[in-house]
Amino acid sequence: MKQARTIRYQSAAHVATVELHRPEHANAIDPDTFAALGEAYHRAEHDSDVRVVVLSGAGADFSVGLDPNAFLPALQKRLFSLDAPGRINPFGTSSRLSKPLIAAVQGTVGAMAHELILAADLRIAADDACFGQGEVSRGTTPAGCASVRMPLEVGWGNAMRWLLTAEDWPAEEALRLGLVQEVVPAGRQVERAQELAAVIAAHPPLAVRETLRIGRRAYEGAAHHVYGELLPAMYSLIGSADFAERLAAMQEDREPVYTAR
Picture: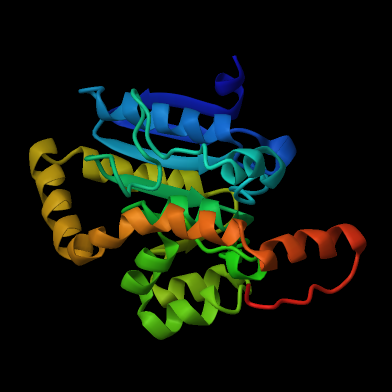
């Protein structure tokens, strides 16, 4: 099955490891992969033996983010949905895992992929990790909550430094900002995430989940009223003249001329 190729799931010792597995495409996330990730989260949520979830990516890159060729038709037709029966929203803006989620990343962590790890509770980065949230340079806006969660995580100015310039930042900067909690040698990120998961999984599960629930409610509570605006904002921008100009400029190999329309 296609989903079995793009998402791999295994569990042991109360820890479920969910792996993005599309390494031949740098783990670019197409609609099937996004759906399969939501199904994997749902599986972990409803497995009473699983207490902690680790998210990882196969190959050199955690994920370059959204696969534009696969996603753009659904987005332009406004058919994409974050929710469906048997899934948990991987961005955590509607439904969300009630169990701790630890992200382990390496190589490129781009845009949508960065938003997936912003929904995690702990993040471990390899020292070769490079992060980006470049939607504004492409004429859109983050629809997976980066414009909300990143300021909460690192402060307004620090978030705008990267969201508005659309520049990439290295693992050292992610650690300085507090976006990741540890930087480890490349190749050790998943092992370290699983070590931390094992420590958490050894604690009473109800206490862990209640601590997480209360903390999330206090941390993100005031932000929830804007979650419903994220996709409509992106849809509006995709329909703009500036977005069409960017696509035309790419096809014609020239610099775009934006008109704020």
